[in-house]
Image (cartoon, rainbow, N blue to C red; front, side, top):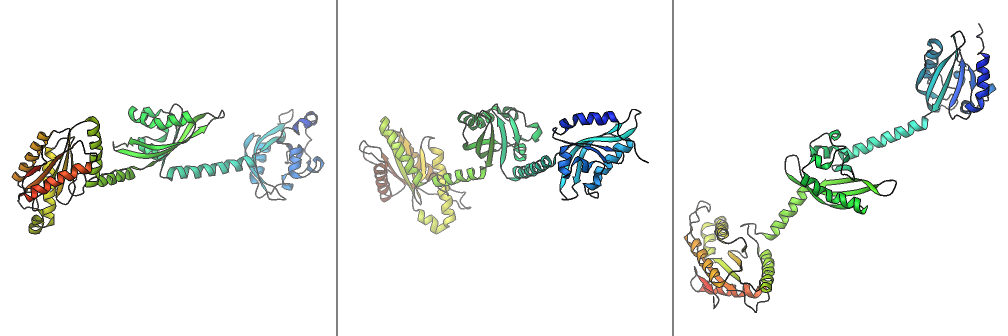
Length: 432
């Protein structure tokens, strides 16, 4: 049975619109009930590599790989047999080259005056390149997301108002909220105001200068522990060239920060007694001498040596000797003022620098120290109860002293006299 031709009025309308349909930029076609082409615009013809005359009356088996383009036949069948309108993505494979093409297709039935389906019309937009780009973008997005989620750094984006535009999981964990509860909110809403203001310093500088900024930032974690970060913040310029957003990369350097402080503390203190060491004591003393001379103040120095300390080590052992050093240091620490500087400057030798202290006051303190140590029973030393005495040399800053060394030398000379004068005594330079 031969199917009736398409209505003449439709063919006439198609003919008048052919020029327009050739310029639309999409694949436009009509088919009869058997799926044979009754019209194809120039985009369809270019795809098939045929003329209109070579295309009319032929179906898609001539142009597409039937086995791999089954979706095309199924969509046409539903339009022609069931009268459905199809709007969906189609994947077709060209017969000659095997090339895959992806289209967004809209297919509708064509009916005659009696409402009977006599064919179909369709318009398809080639989205192959768009899909390829979308797949590539999705691949890059997944790669970027994988990197951002596993890089071991805190990564975030903010706008000029310091609203979060993006946070990776590490930032979300730090703030104790899911990412979706953070984005769009101001940093001051998510942390203490004081912390937000501290963190804003580098942010403000980025927006003010339009240049990358780097520096150390501190922020308490969700357990209240202060943590330290090295942050790099980069401006993201808008179309106007003025930065409206920034992206930040922060690395947790708390362990490094703590180690640095520990090393700094170790460089200043004696590991056995916890007092300042000789090097740091001399550095502080030089500054104090300069300050004292500038303001014409008084300054005293005493050097204390534990008497017969070698006997303690020989008789009781070095662990007990170490304990004696610690306890004697603690006794002296309890008796000096906050502004005084106490240090272990030798094996069993200590020094105390006394700013703004007159000779009489320094002399009185030295005597109290000597008496307090002599009266103490060092019972905590490895279970051994023993007592020790100390010898003390005392000197006072003179007008001729331009450096600390000269003051220290005179105090050391006074200590020498105390030890050779019988020990357990204080010797002060003449006039004190």
